[in-house]
Amino acid sequence: MERALAVIPGGVNSPVRAFRAVGGTPRFIASASGPWLTDVDGNRCVDLIGSWGPMILGHTHPDVLRAVHDAAMSGFSFGTPSENEVALAEAIVARVEPVEQVRLVNSGTEATMSAVRLARGVTGRSKAVKFAGCYHGHVDALLAHAGSGVATFGLPDSAGVPASAAGETIVLPYNDEAALAAAFAEHGDQIACLITEASPGNMGVVPPRPGFTQALRRLTREHGALLISDEVMTGFRCSAAGWYGLEGPYEAGPPDLFTFGKVMGGGFPAAAFGGRADILAQLAPIGPVYQAGTLSGNPVATAAGLATLRGCTPEVYARLDTVAHTIADAVDRELSAVGVPHRIQFAGSMFSVFFRDREVADYDDARDQDVPAFAAFFHAMLEGGVHLPPSAYESWFVSAAHDDEAVEAVLAALPAAARAASDSRDRMPG
Ligand SMILES: *Cc1c(COP(=O)(O)O)cnc(C)c1O
Image 1 (spheres, helix red, strand yellow):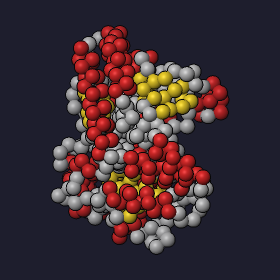
Image 2 (image 1 turned 90 degrees about the vertical axis):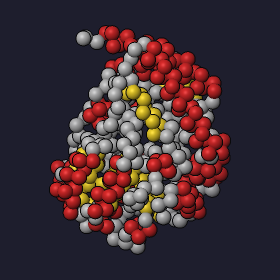
Image 3 (image 1 turned 90 degrees about the horizontal axis):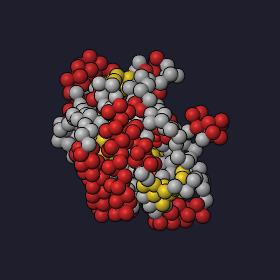
Image 4 (image 1 turned 120 degrees about the vertical axis):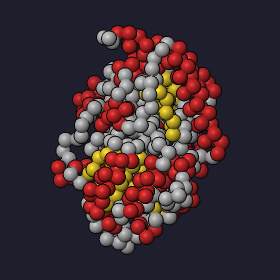
């Protein structure tokens, strides 16, 4: 870590990897296999970060490894069309019914940035609506009141975003239909798009209340704005068709655009945005909205993504559900046993544990929790051989490779972690 701190800001290449919210020094991971991480000192722990979503099949899955090896043997990048990118696009279109075409990019950030640009190009309008606590990557205009690391470190917004960019963003509380209606009544004719996490996971898991997603669809349509469903985290994880597969189809109609990332890259840099073909036809080279990428559709990354999507069988989703519920039930049991207030919320097999006792419906609720209790819980879990995301505002990610041995290891670490959370509360004044 000292070497890292000398040459990399904060020692990390993405802020959530630092332990600043929980204290201590991050583990440097040397290798990973199935549900296990092994650090440079040789300690093994159960992984509940899953690279923040991609590792749905577990680490170094043999089929994905073979696909990567075979692809790499044929060349690393061509800068010309190649077959893997078509196969991956076909796999996405086959899984998510409203998506007719996709453009491949390298990160979720690029996907949302490009989707918003496309929406602005199509509508000729400039404003974007987003929800507080939702994270859509580090796109200038979408950093306002963002989740993920921005939430973890309690940052109001990011420096370096010009007022002109931030001023085009309208930020609303999640799950609040009245606030939404008011914003569209006032600015409706200037709003290019509303972008939302399909089911938010970056302020912890905060699913839409029944009817909320439909209300987004109705209002955007009434006002001629596009609805962008950001499925970078939920896509191909909550179900084969992502959150849309669990909650859709909607009576009010599907979102216009979707963004994907994480699982669809299988641990490599691949992401996508897509939707109706008439909208995607506005992209260069056939339309006026420019969007490009030297490594977009990279043959090795697309091979990894394709092998991962193909590996996501019904049995895999069933295993994810079993593992998630087994762990969450045990967390509930152990925290209850020591009287620590908590609330566990799910979106498919994504779940998070809030250290408060009431529903979390929006970002204000998520922030109203006992973060020091989480930090104590986190470190006791790590001590017990389980690596949680180092933030109270993140989903826990399980994989289909979490076998009974890995699940038992998590259950074994929980009692001491629950006691640590309880002890941290006893130390609190009042
Ligand atoms: C992770 C994430 C992003 C950003 O993806 P990167 O690949 O980190 O740029 C965007 N939206 C959501 C919902 C995410 O969870």
